[in-house]
Image 1 (cartoon, helix red, strand yellow):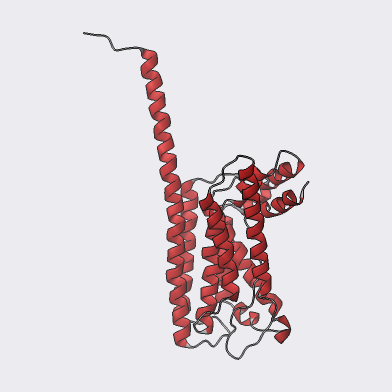
Image 2 (tube, one colour; image 1 turned 180 degrees about the vertical axis):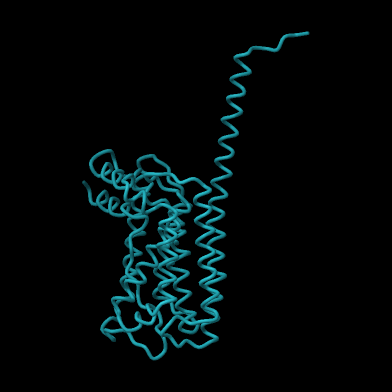
Length: 303
C-alpha cells in the first residue's frame, strides 16, 4: 500500500479528519488551565486542516491523471470547508466573548461541516483506491452496521443538538473556562457532531443504508427546531455558571439563531436538489417504459 493509499484510507474512515481546536475567547475573568504554555495550540487546527486539504487535493489530482473526472466544485467545497475550520480557531472576531464564541461555533460546527460533506471525501477515497485490501477495508467500514447506525438521521440529531443543549444549558460551558482539555474535547465534539449531522442529512457518500428523503428532511426539521429554541433560551438566560454581559449574550444568541437558519436553508437546498434529480430520473424511466410498451404493441390500426 502506498503512502497516498494509507492517507486516503484514514481520510475515509470518517466524513472528515477531526481537528484539534484552539480555545475560543473565555468568559471574562476566567482563564484556561495551562496558561501561556498552550499558546501554540492554534497551530494544531491550521496544520490539521491544511494536511487534510492537501491529502484531498493530491487524491483528486491522481484520480484525474488516471483519466477519471472529479468535479472541481466538489474539491473547492472541501478546501473551503477546511479553510473555515482553520479560520474559526485563529481569526480574531471583533465581538464580545460570547458572540465571538458563537461565531466560531457556527463556522466550525455548521458551515464548515456542510462544505466538507459536499466535497464527498468518502467517494473520492473509494474511487482513488485501486481494487485491493485497502479499498475492501474502507468499504467494509463504510458498510458496517455500527457506521450505518452512527450516520442515521436520528442518531445525528441526538449527538449534534443534544450536545449543544448539554453545553449551553448545563455548567459545562463554564467548566471549559477552567480546563483546557475539556475545552478542546467540547470543540472536537462540536466539529465531529456537526459533520455527522450534515453527512446524515445530505447523504452524498455511499454508506450501509440510504435513508429516504422524508427521514432526512424530518431530521433537518427536528435539528433546526432544537437549534432555534436553544438560541431563544440563550437570548434570555445565560449558560449556567457564566456572567456574560446582557448585550453580548443577546448578540450571540441572535447570531446563533440566524446563522443556524442559513445553514439549514443550505441543507434544505441539497435535499431539494436530490429530490428534483430523483423525480427527473423516475419520469425518464416511466417515459422509456411507456415507449417500449407502445413499440411492442405496434402501430395503431387505421380506421
